[in-house]
Image (cartoon, rainbow, N blue to C red; front, side, top):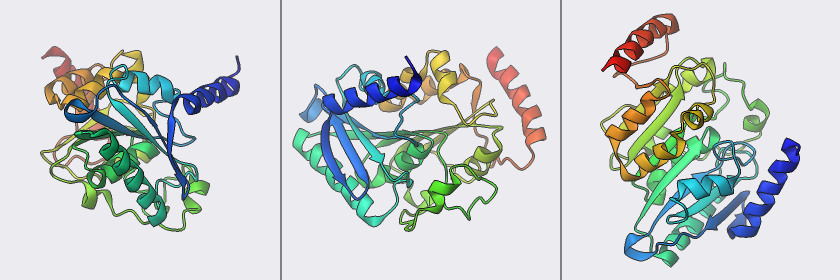
Length: 278
C-alpha cells in the first residue's frame, strides 16, 4: 500500500476513534479517553509535529503505547495552519479545551509530549496547562525566522505566522516542571536551537551522536521509544539516562554550546567510549 494512502487511512481511523474537543482558531484538538479517572487518572497532551504526525507514526499507534495501553488519557493538539501553536486565539482555544477535559475527567496530572514543532509546543505550553513534566524530541527553541536566519527549514510556513504570541521558552520553562529534551548533537540547524535552551536542575537535556534532525527512528530501532515516554511519566531520571545510552545520547554538559563542532565531536567520542565502559 502506498505511503500516502496508508497515512490517510491512519488519520481516518484516528478521527473515528477519537473525540473532538475543539476546532477553532486553527486548532484541532482531539482526545482518546483513558481507563483511569479521578485520583488515579493522568493524561498526556501530545502536540503534533509538522503535517500532524506524532513520532512519525499514526496517532492511534502512538496513543496506544504512550498511554500505557489505554490507561492514561491522550489529548492531541494539532495546528492546522502549521503555525507553531502561535496566536492568542489559538492559545486560548488550547487552554480552554484541555482545562475542560481535565476537569471533566478529574485528571490529577498531565505531561506534555512532542516532536520537532510539537516538541516546541510541549515545552511552550507545559506550565500554562499545569503539567508537571514535559518530553520534547528535537524541539525548536524559537520559530521566528529572524532568530536563527541560517535555519531555513519550513521557511514558507514560518514566514506566514503573523502573530508570534508565545513568550520565549526560557521564560515559560517553570522550575516546578521536569523537562526532558533530546536533540541530535551534530545537526547544523538543530545545534543553533539546542544551545539556546536554558540549563538547570529540572532540565535533562540529552544530545545524541547524530547529524540528523530525526531522533525518533534511533529510539524506535533501539526499542526504547515508549520506555522513554514511560520514564518521563514516572520521572525516573536514572532510567532515562540508561535508556538514552542505547542511542549514544549524553547529557549536555554545563555551558556546552555548539560553537566548535570539531572539538565537541572529539570530546563526544571520548565520553561515549567512557560511558559505554562504565
